[in-house]
Image (cartoon, rainbow, N blue to C red; front, side):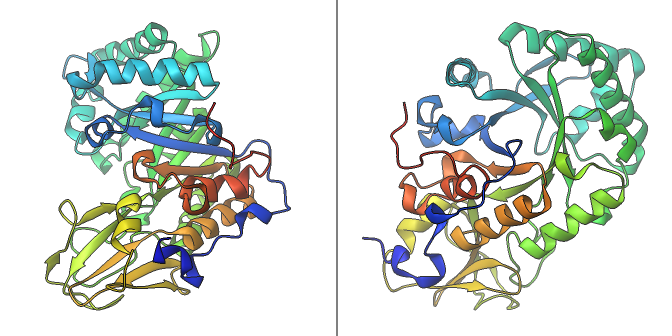
Length: 357
């Protein structure tokens, strides 16, 4: 048995939860196109644990045309849509995504091009029978008008469709990144996912949590203060950690990225990495996050206690759900699965021990 399972700070008691969460609680799983290159396919998704899937990413060009970021993912994308529909899980496509701000800007700053972009999004929804679209773009202050128009025009266009597609958007967690977003434009969204992940930032010089429940709570209050309906707010949790070479714990300096793919290790990899005496794994109460320290590096990540604390925050405040980024990083043994941890708080009626049908 994994040593990781024997650590008291990582023992889950989620199967005994008695409080039933709101029926509206969403458990959203992100599936980026590159998951297939880690041998994670549509058949590997545990659909009975989810209410929604967000598949990423579609990217626009300067003419307003839209296409998969990776053409090689077409067959996988179509299979993902097919299986989600068969399993009764809502399937949405994320438009934009990491590093695509310039593409989104080019497709929205001109009124005529933006109109074409909106029409092509409608066409995409109809072509594949999608349940909706997520606009994954954190705009700059200079993009505020174009971003507002895009969401408003999509909301209007979606209202003319039957059934009406879902409209969602991603939001930043920090006040310094909200200059490009008009909260009024979010009124037409069915829910919004708040990117409460990668909180360290590229300029960090000391080890900080990869995600933190107190910071997430602050972000939720910030958006509520800006007029967003609490029931629409869905914080993200990362199913991966970041390794920092030379760090000796939270608050200590690091000399560069540590192990993993450019310092990133998914939760499943961490389960194997911690199977032995090399790492001391602890739960930091102040940040509600996990920390693993070895003689070579510190790894900041989200484990069962921290993910449970986020899900509990959502349940206790009637927020809109929890989004997992991304599903391919989870460990599939139910006792130590982060997806099961989320679901056991928000959807305790589900049998998490049952095999996928």
